Image 1 (spheres, one colour):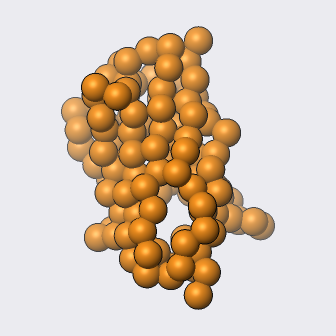
Image 2 (cartoon, helix red, strand yellow):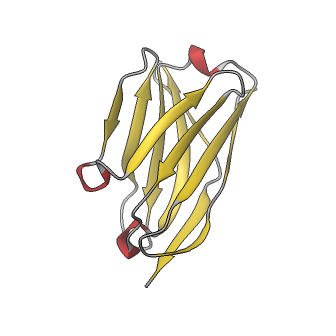
Length: 116
């Protein structure tokens, strides 16, 4: 059974950094077609923040380009999201997502709050 567990969220001042981690169990992360970080702020739709494909190609939401970086740690079976120069509008619950074909897997999410 595939499980994704996020960690690393918290409270951070604007301009600061946080590193989120998503630990996968039940399979090797290289078996996923893509691994992704989504976020959802209250009252807003969930949006794709960053994606890494099985070949290692990355894609980012325009508003986080140059500030966020997604990476895989094959040895640890994790996918991380390094977030820098955080802004209050980055505050949201961040979810780890992985896809194999049309099958999506989701974590429970971790909350990020950026204050001024």
